[in-house]
Length: 149
Image (cartoon, rainbow, N blue to C red; front, side):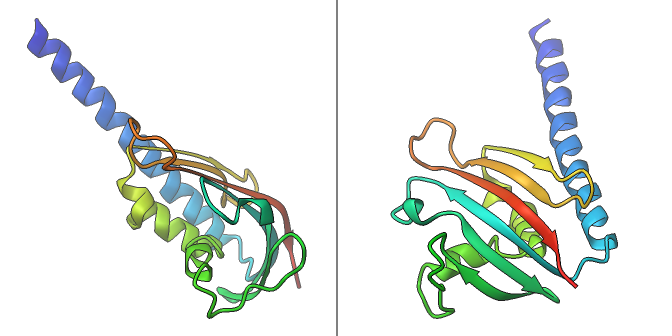
């Protein structure tokens, strides 16, 4: 009997993981087919981090490249700033999708994602690398998305 319960649980857990991956893939395709190449958004990076009080970031992207990135107070974040590497992982929706598929987020014990219903980009992401650990969680929130011409 225990063996049957274990098999049923294993199948259910696999189905949930496949469903989450399918959601990610479907929404990535939705984003890619939207045709949006120039956009602006705010990104709130919530973690146990020193920069927390400078959020949200204001980011503009054109043709897959970051045009500008500033802290909430308007201070530009130069490309050579060491913290910029952390932000660049999420600074374009293509980069965010890539991180969720094969970056550190893909190896996390728990990831929950909500998607923008119109464009498909991840609008709310919770990443918990190790469920039993404290202060390793990362929450990303996208707001004020705007398509630019």
